[in-house]
Length: 251
Image (cartoon, rainbow, N blue to C red; front, side, top):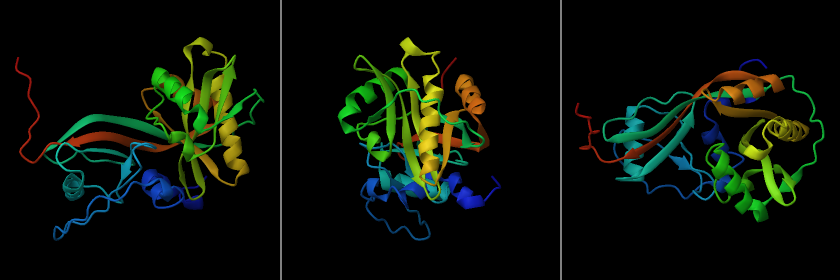
């Protein structure tokens, strides 16, 4: 897919374009407005019961200062976009991880492993599986973001995958996880293809994110036919106040 085709540039800031577009109904109420002259920044964020991420259209030091005003002292901000510069003084980064953003290329059709559709009634089992396997942030209402499918055996939810970010022409595959008891059976790949096939049948293209350090997952997605588009940053930060300085270990 050529760069820019079908709005591919929107993938540089997927949370922003999701919450400003197809997923606007999941946005939390906006922070209280502030009128600092010359410092304009609109922060948009998911309802915390659905997702942890926030977004701004552009990000640099002035925007970090504006976000600080909006979240308040000891407030958190989780950003997910192409390049996130280090925050201004007073912020503490709790996590920064480079992810690979991958777009479906020449992928095969799913083999047809029996799957079940998951919904709000399955949220407790989905949360338990996500807590065990840590595929990324998963909240009590994340399942409402799109189509989720899983594999159950004797009532146990053993694998799942579904849709998270959604923007014009693209839908993200997320929460791909498999219980340790059934790893090696190919369920993660099968569910990924199942969700990707459904996305394409709906007229959109599938994409996903994976931590660059998760080499096994990267190899799996490449084997399935996903192609790396670019790296993106994931940052979780907390505002402590302009006078706060990180502690320096003494040796």
